[in-house]
Image (cartoon, rainbow, N blue to C red; front, side, top):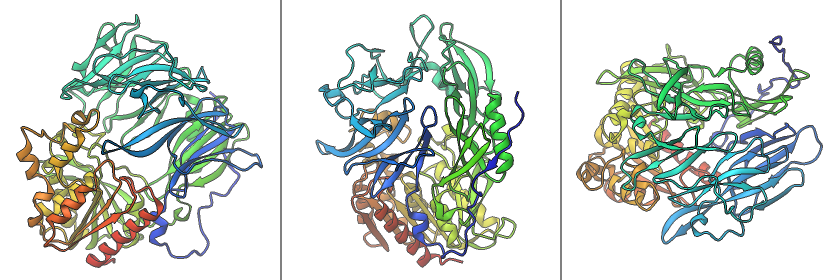
Length: 633
C-alpha cells in the first residue's frame, strides 16, 4: 500500500467572505448553481446540470483548456439526468411535459452529446413503436467495456431490454432480454447481462422479484421480499450470485449478503452495521470487486474496500476535517478525482484532485453566496414517541444558539415529503432560510421514513401513527424548553403538506399556523388519480384501499376536517403539478372558505419548485406568512 497522500490546495479553501450584504430570501431560494456533477471517463471533461433561465441544461467544460464551456440547452428540453459512456460522449434524458387524453404526463427522449465535437442529437428519432412513444430514456445501465452501447428497456408495462447504440435511430430488432410476466424494471451487471427483474402482479396487489442464475434460468424469489430483500450489486465474476441486503431476526437493520440464485441459499455476510441500512454498493468498473459501501445514516461513514481510494479520502478528510467528504467521481486511469464536500450548514461544494501532483483545487459550490454564511447548525437528536418507539430527528438552530442555550424559540415543524423518503444531516435550503429568520426547525424521520428498521410501521398510517410521531416531536421540543408553545408553525410539501394540514386539524391548539405546498388534501381523490398511471395502484397500496377502505381514507383527509382547524392556513400549489394535482389545493381552499386562509397559485410550476421566479415567489410568500404569525426572534 502506498504512503498516505498529502494534499496541496491550489486555491485557498476560501469560502470566507469579506464584508457582504445581509442575506436575503433570494439567496436561499435561488436554484443551486450546479448539481449532478461528474467527470468524463478519462477526466478530460467536467460536467454538471445547471439552470439556464427556467430550464435545466447540461454544461460540459474541458479542464485546463481556454475554450468556453459547451452548454446544452433548448427552449423545450429539460435535462433529467446524464451518464458518460466514454471520454467524449454522454447520453442524457430529456423531459417534456405534455397531456395525453386529459392526463398530465411527461414524455422523455434520449439525447447523445458529443463533448469534443460539441454536437447534440436525439436518438431513436425513427422509432415508431407506440409502446416506446412516451418513455424513451429508461436506460438500464451503461456498459463500461462497450463505450458505444448501453442497455435500455421499452415496452410499457411489459418491457423488453435492448443493447442499443449511440447512433441508434430505432430500437434493435434483437432483445437482450425478453419481457417476463409482471416484470416492469430490469437490472444488469457491468457486462450487460440482465439478471434481475422486479415488478408487480396484474392486480397490482403484490410485488414480484425474479433472478437469473448462472446457467441462464429465471427463478421467482418473490417470497424473499417479505424479508425486505433488495439487490444492491451484481458481480460479473459470480454470475450465479447477487449481493443483496436482507432483514434478519437478530439485527435492527438489514445486512449485505451473497445470495446464490441456483440453490436459493444465502452465503457470506459482506457488510452490516447496527446503526443503519445500506444505501449503495459500488463495484469497480469491471464489476468484479466492491469499491465502497455507503449507508443511509449520516452517523456511519462510507466504507472503502479499495485501499487507494481510502488513502485518498483519509488525506482529504485530514485537510478538510469539518465537512463530510465523498469521492463523487474518478477517472478510469485514476489521474483525477472529484470530491464532494458538505455538512448540515455548508452546501455541496466540489474539489478537483490531481493524483500525480497531489493538488486539490476548489471548483464551485451549489450555493456560493451561502458558503460559510448559512446560519443554522444542524444537531442530530432523538425523542420517544407515545408508544415508546425512538424517533430520530434533526434540529436546526439559529446562528449563535447551541442546544443547551436554546430557549423559548419560535419554531417551524418541517415534516418531509414522500412519505417513502427521509431527511438527512445535510444542507437544506428551506431549513436554513427558516433559521436565518430566527426560527428553530425540527425535521422528523417519523415511522415510514426510509433507511430505518421502523419503515414498515408507516404503511397505511397516513393520519395515524406517522402523524402521531410528528405531534410527539413537537411536544418534545416544548417539554425541552426549546420552543415557545405559543409560536409553533407546521410547514411541509407533498406528503409533508398533508402532514401539516392534518396537524392543524388533529391538534388545533398545538400550532399557531400552518402552510402546505403542493400538498395532498384528499386521499380518495389521490388514489383515484393514481389509477390513471401504470403501476399506480401498486405504488399507492400503502396509503389505503379505494373500495374497502374508503371510509378510513375520507376520515384521514384534511379536506374533510377543515372545520376542526383553528389556525391560519397558507396553501401554495403549482398549477402544472403532475404528482399532486392542483385540484387538491382548490378543494382544500373551498373547504376553508369560512376560515382564515390564502391560496397562492404558482403559475406554470410543477411539483418540485423548479422555475426560479416561482420558487422565489413561493419563498417570499411563505416567509411573510411565518413572520406575520410567529415573528422572528
